Image (cartoon, rainbow, N blue to C red; front, top):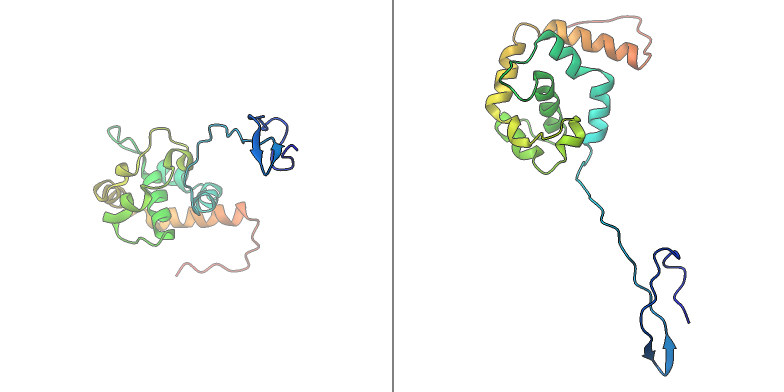
Amino acid sequence: MIATGLYSNFERVRLPRVPFGGDVVYTAQQQTPDVQTSDLGPLPIVMHYLRELKVREIIDKAVPPHTLHNITHGECVEALLCAIFLGTHTLSHVAETLERYDLPDLFNHPGLSSEQFNDTRIGETLDALYGKTENLYAEIVLRGIQAFHLKIQRIHTD
């Protein structure tokens, strides 16, 4: 008797015969390939919409990053929004909240780590955005109207 149905022919390996109740039985062992897993949680959905709205690009165009920073202001805003969607509203907890997620994949930024989104760096981003938020808000809203083909009859900015 050969174990079938559980594994494809590619995955089935014949092992030595094992006596079982007097009958000879072949056993099968699954060969598992090396698989790398990463935790993404709900963040791919959040990042999809942030990319559709071009939040990072809009912010980075309005407030170019300093040459000493490894991450841009747009990435800091994206990280802050991700943390908010995960339930964290405190700047000092953003890095801690994001540490279990695969940030290089989510942000498409190799070498990115949650420690880079510390409260000092996010605070610098918020300082850099001061006085520019109304224009940025309007540009992101207009981008959303275009990206999602929304029909707008009236717009209130209050």
